Length: 255
Length: 306
Image (cartoon, rainbow over all chains, first blue to last red; front, side, top):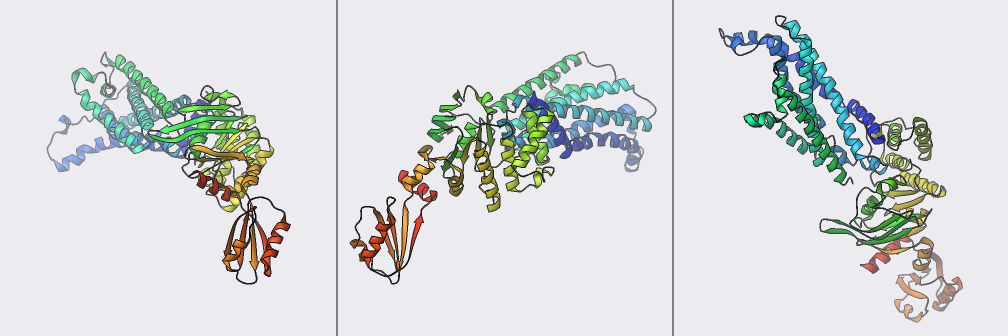
């Protein structure tokens, strides 16, 4: 418990002083501002390129369309930022041997891993919610015709955050397996970007956490019946991945 | 006996680093752990600190078996790795507080302990500077403070003064002398033999994964450190003069131009050497008694075992 509390403070300090929180915030919030604007300007941009083309068949010029576009970028680009900024979360500690002194002073590995996960989970939850709220507000200003209920946005934000939390647990495990953060990063990204491809197989799609992204994109209360099961499954995956990380970290020689 | 290692073995794959290491460290002594680079000193230190496991053998610390009491023993042992690594964005004060929190100290205790330790290692003035900007010597001193945090009975110091400039080295050795006065048992690994000579009570020499010599420093000096007499004559001396000197206590005589070095194998009465000089019957310019040092012992013992 002492290690857990001490590492909560340490990770929060590291997140602020090494600008990890800031990078995550930029990587997630930037598109909340950009996407509605791009969507608003898109007809004007394309009108000069393809005069007479009916864009309404291709793009959804509504608030929902702007939020869906934001979620696309969250998957494609924010995931990249998430992986690149956190791929060294454990591997850097192993490579730099910064765990040796705390460990020789009774630091508990389980507490260290859980503290790291908790700090960045909270950061992701807050940043994602802020991102969605900014996106909601901004897209409401630009597309005032069809306004979504804010409760739907909160649900969407939570569903998407849970998907990010799964990715965080995956990065944590990969980072415990390799002393080179970049290897952990490449492997994590490969799995994250391969998941939609595997998800195209009908029978498998529901059991992968990417299913949460699909459901978040619905932006209404008409979620599939399997969503609750998918949430439970994803939480289960997170627990398993954290468990494996703790197991690995207790086995690895820290010197 | 505060540390007792018996037949300690450690393998990395097929590479056997420790091949049955045995040593005993008494309470309150400073034990010098010597060996070439790659002899297995750091591996032994890491095992004693509970950072890595060992394959065979027994370690008892305060009569408690290391394997069975690894977690409990960690609190009683302070460890300074060869190159202590800290979080560079923290200040020394913050890092010490972080270690205090890991150990479960309350805020008041952390505050008072930080003050004591920063004074001990003379880092009070720079305690609010980021560690990333510290010199190697300052990091080493901070490492000593961290290793002392839990008031350990045993302190493991792995090459604490290597790679430091002479001032940094002196500071570190001074701190070790202070620790000795505090009654802390220090297990000191180094290849700087002058540091060992200055602070250690006993030494163990590790070579080829085994301890090849373990002895109290004063006994070791008596056994191995023999005086050398350097005599400078007015004129060059002929080498055949060596054959005329026949004494049991003379181990070796070397002659170069007008200089003669007489290596003696025991502490002799200085008048005996005067008699030898008188027998040579040549005018002398100077007579100098030179004592060999721990480096000579180390080289001699290691070369005997190679």
